[in-house]
Length: 135
Image 1: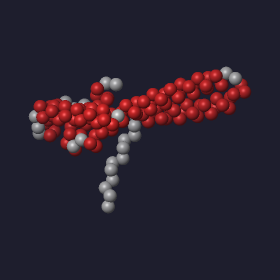
Image 2: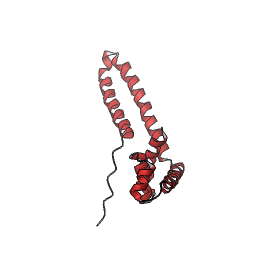
Image 3: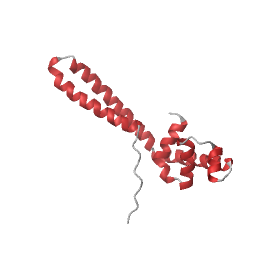
Image 4: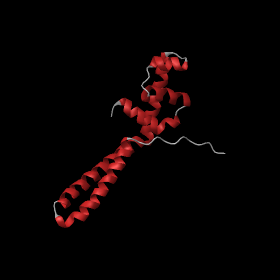
């Protein structure tokens, strides 16, 4: 996984633990692909200030991941689901070759579709709902 993609996922997972300004700067840099200069102009701070904020944010996100391991666990679940999918596909191919196992093969198709949906959720996570203010 490239650094930008990995940092984007870490922002998704742990961004709520950063300060609001730090999260905004990290989001603009990694997700919106703005340059240090563009971000500096936006916040009326120096490019060095933006660089320092990103560096501190990177370090914080990496530390959170080292301690909590959410991204690593997510990747392990994704690999596990992909492995299950491969087993189901092999079973489908074997059952599909025998006429008497066609109903089993049809059920495996449903299982394969379910695996595809779960893998798609990991590849393209749905945006989290904004926290609603409580009355």
